[in-house]
Image (tube, rainbow, N blue to C red):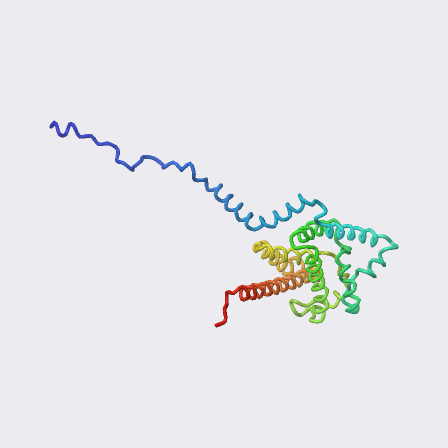
Length: 266
């Protein structure tokens, strides 16, 4: 054996390892990464809205939602009265809307009909809807806009009932003639409209789209009746209000930019 061969040994090649490469300590596991991405998405979707609601409730507590508390108490009182033998007719006279009645009478009753719970649904559902959705809307967009959007959504449902009966049951957007005798009360149309409006204002686009899709699926697959189609009418009316609001804000921004000197006449 030569001395050159005896002194040569093979050592480990730099940069090469045997066996599996261990994970880096600073790199999260796949499940953790997915949870982090989901948490970031939820924070971006609902973060600004939840912060606004939380700060108002912490600062002012129930004083932050006087309109909502009034609506809850009014709904509860009307429910109690209309379930009494002596009070049913009185509540129907001031808050019941039916499509066969004169339009002016329906318009007078429409604002109060929002707080008259439907007879075939549990009152706690109406109270929960008002407390949560009206409360969030009152804090996030103010009492005036909450009332305005709630009335627009309810009025859209009331007007659709008359238009749908006029179109007739042969059309997918029409209604049978028997629906003109259905008592049309409850906060559901206003609740759906307010949910869309608040989501639009706070740029919660996924939630806004989910509400719209849910209302369409409700009509197509679950509840193809007056109530379901009124929800879709309320959503469309509020989306139109949102679009008009965006158009008005874009025009104001354009006017402000011209006034501030971004556009100079030559």
